[in-house]
Image (tube, rainbow, N blue to C red; front, side):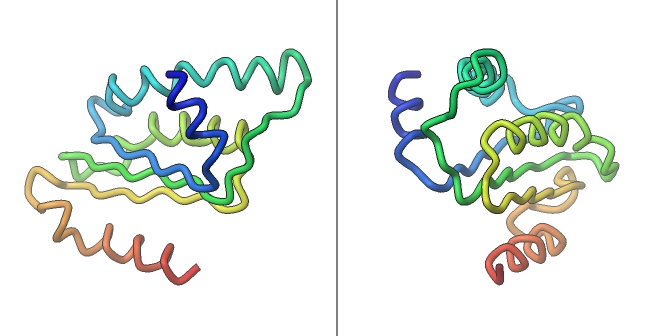
Length: 119
């Protein structure tokens, strides 16, 4: 985690990517995000500024289901990260129905990425 903390303090863009499993981000990604608790405590408990300044925060997700509700849990986590790191811009890319549509060929996800690129 020390390498991740150092990298986070030196970057201006954070891109997180995870499939959605049962309405939530993967366990592996959540293990990292859960360790961001130190930043939460620093900012909200100890009232000290973070030495992290993100210009962009992007979350890329995919779900096998057609239901967009599958992304709700990931969105809650994303909202906490936005509040914590206060990036200049932030985006979510959601590729749904990946049981039937390859994420690389998912027109909706591609459209979302194109919109981000334009900004």
